[in-house]
View 1 (cartoon, rainbow, N blue to C red):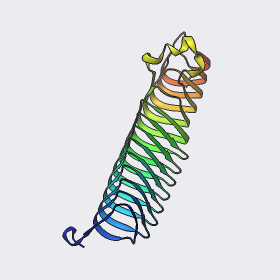
View 2 (view 1 turned 90 degrees about the vertical axis):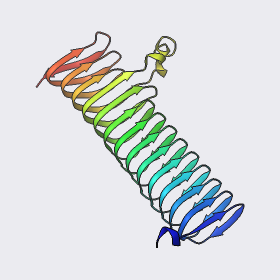
View 3 (view 1 turned 45 degrees about the vertical axis):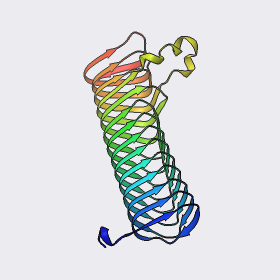
Length: 257
């Protein structure tokens, strides 16, 4: 069906509608759609539920939206609260509100300024986290940049990992070519008042080519060129080419392999 043949569907107030193929779908009140929707744009400004899958070019949530099936979109923008019970696939995903996904998220780019939680994997090219991100499975991407916080119950695998510690960060294991973890100097004053509130990175294993760590707790760090900066507690460091350790840090053992 061509775009010109599609009709619009709008609900203002309280209403129920079947699914179908539309051009623009907009809900400004309390709305319910009873089956799959295929549309150009889907905008939820009120409280909207979809008992099916959603396929669209543009998915915008300014209110509360629930989708019981998979979501496939070119662009996803969540300013309010969105829940998806299936898998989500998009070209670009931006979360300024709250986005909960029971399945996995596959997207070219993900920007999280609010809160995103995933029950499955995250597969992306670039990930930027200024809010909080949680994933119950692995995170795979080319670039992982953080100025917020995250908790990953699996492997964080990225070519380039750049973490500025504003909030607590945690992953089972971290692997990458370049792994750079720094403490935000603006919140360093917390150490003198409430040391327990100082943000840390926690992981069992951190492995990469070039590694620089601050304020990190890890059982094992393994890399070619490794620098352990201030505020770290590391069980074992294994390095191939070079190793440097700050005096204000604790490393139980280090070996050249």
